[in-house]
Length: 267
Image (cartoon, rainbow, N blue to C red; front, side, top):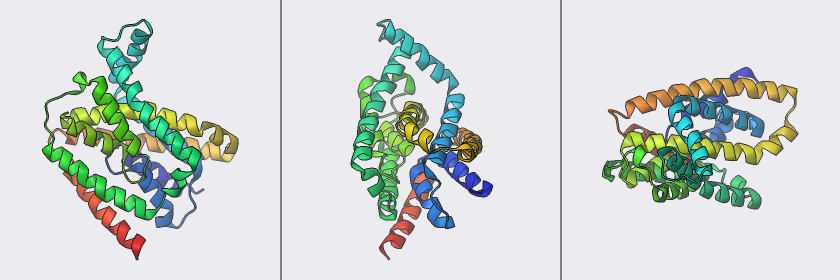
């Protein structure tokens, strides 16, 4: 695999993982656009590890609070802020793990990797994001995240296993519908990505170890570093823009891309 293609995969993953425009959809489309073979699971896992490192670094304070919360939960304390955050992340991750296992075992995950599916998901969930962002009240902050809301956002997050939906986009949509302000909805979405990426990496881990060789391992390491840098830049930019800009620019991009993909798919 050429260094340039590794760069493309890493940058696409890094820029789209935390923006509400679907990283999985872009990774599926990339080989078709450049006329290359699919990069494979080893590289996919590597670039996801890169984005995982970026979100942990950016939200390191929240991550430390959550890690402390796991210890509090072990001692039976469920009322402390860290314990509630940790428990919320656990509850919010269960639906996507269960749905992911069903798709993986039945083989439906491969069946959904089509241009038509990505196009419809881009279009429909982009419009839903716009509606939620415009109509949703801003009455809650991330510090007031409840376990009920964590479960609701977790169920929505499971829908993101449909390529083109966007994990960050669908959880931000759920957060805005529940009344969280834009920055809080995005913050909760990003924190929810940490256990989700870890779970998906664990699911594919055995297959990756089995298929990897020295060359793939080296390529994966390069891709992970580049993905980390791109993801950190994208995450920093989005969180800063949310202080003054809505999600409308991302919605426009999704709708335009969705229409283009549908035209291509059906003609």
